[in-house]
Length: 598
Image 1 (cartoon, rainbow, N blue to C red):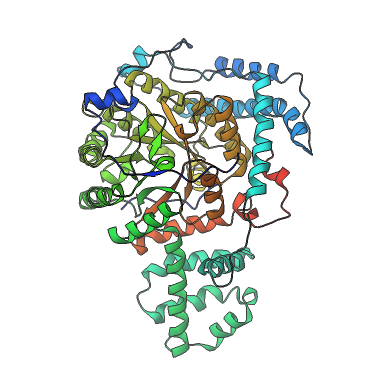
Image 2: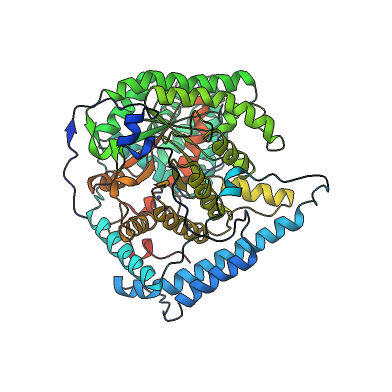
C-alpha cells in the first residue's frame, strides 16, 4: 500500500457567529457553461501575465544575490533585538531579522545547488532538453519585492494576532473521566525518558506482527527490561512477576494491545466507510472540514496498486453522496468563488503504479495517469476534491510533472477541485512554487497548494549522508520555518491562482499567515488552515471559532499498516519545538512561541 517512511519533522479577531445553515443545492458540473459564468472555478480563461524576469528553470547566483541585496538594503535602518518584550520591539527587529534569514537561506540553497551541479555527470552530447509548453510561453515568475514598511507592519500584526489567539486558547487540561486524559497521560509518562520512548516506539512498531498474547507479553518483557528502573512501580512489578503464558501475562498483553489500538484510533479515522463517515460527521459537528488519506505500506505489485485505486473510487462513490446530504455550512462549503466540495481526499502517486521510477519518467507517468484519470472522473461526477501528496525528494520532480501534465489534458483543464503539496524544508521549494505559478498562469484555472514543512527530514538527511549526495533539505529547523514564511507570503500574493492551504500546528507560522492575508487583502474564505486528525484539538476549534476554515487531514485504513503512521504522530506530538507541547502551559513564554525564525 502507500508508503509512510519517516518519523516526522515539524507538524504546528473577534469571535465569528456560527455559520449559517441552509439547504444544500447540488452544484452544476465544472464543464457546464452556465456554471462557468457563475463561478471562476469553471473558466478556462487564462490569467493575464505580469511582467517578470527572463524565463529560467533554475535560480542563478546572480538572481539570488540581487534578491539578498534588496532585502539587506530594506533592512539597513532596522536594529535587531535579541529580546522582544513587546509587540513594538518585535516589529522593529522584523526587517533586519527577515533580511538575515533570507540571506542565510539563499546562501544555503546556492551552496547546495552548486554541489548538486558539480556532482551530476555531464549530459550526453546527443541528448536534448525539451521545454514544457508553459515554460516557453510564460515567463518564469520571480518573488515580488516586499518593502521594509510592509515587513515591519506584518511582523507587528503577527505578534498582536498571536498574543490575541494565545489569550483565547482554552488551555484546560482534559479531565480524568475523558479517554484523552489517559492517552495524554501515557504519552507524557513515556516521553519523559528518552530510553523509554525508544523502547515504546520499537514495541508499537512490531506489535501488529504479534499474533498471540504470549508473544506480546514476551516482547513487552524483552523491550522494557532494559529500562525497567524508569517505569512506574506497578508496571515494573507486573512485568517482573508475570510469565508470558500466565493469566497475568495474557492480561498485560491484552491491555497493551488495547491501549495501542486506542492511540491509533485517535489519529486514524477508521477502516470501513461507516467508521469513516462517523469520524467525519463528528468533525463536521465541531465546525471542521476534512480530507482523507489512505494509509499503507509501499506498493510492490500491480495488484496492490489496483487495490489502492479501487479503495479511493469506492470511498468517493460511497462517502460523497452521504456527506453532501449535510446542510450547507457557509464557513466550510463556500469560498470566494462559490461552492467547494465537502468530500475531499488526498493520495500519493507512487501508490498508483508499482513501477513508479524517476529513472523512467515516461513509463511511470503513463502508468500513474491510467489509474489517476478514473479517480479524477469519479471526483468530478460525485462533486469531490482530490489532492496530490508529496513523498520523499527523489519523487518530487516526477510527481510535479505528472500533476501538471494530466491537468493540462482537455478533460481536466477547467477542473479546479484539485491541488498539490509544496514542502518548505526543501532548498528548491520556492523554485517549485514559482514553477507552479508559471504553469497555473498558462493553464488558466486555479489549483490549491498545501504548504507543509515536510515529513521526511530524517529520511532525506540519512540517505544523502549515506550515499554521499548533497542534502536536499535545510539542516536547521529555523531555516525550514523561515522558508515556510517566505512561501506563505508568495501564496498569499498569488491566492487567485494558487489557493493557499497552510498546514501547520505552529502558532508563529499560522499567525504569520493570517497577518499576510490581512495585509494583502486576501478574502478570509479564499484560503484555509489544515491540521492533523487527533492533534491540537483546542487549536483547531479556536481557529474555527475565529472564522477560519480549518480542514483536518484524517488518515483511514487498517490498523496494521497504520502503525508506522502512529509512530510518526507520537514523535510529532512530543517534539520539543512543537507548539503542542506548550498548549496546556499557562506560564509558557508567548514571546518564544512567536519569535521570528533565525
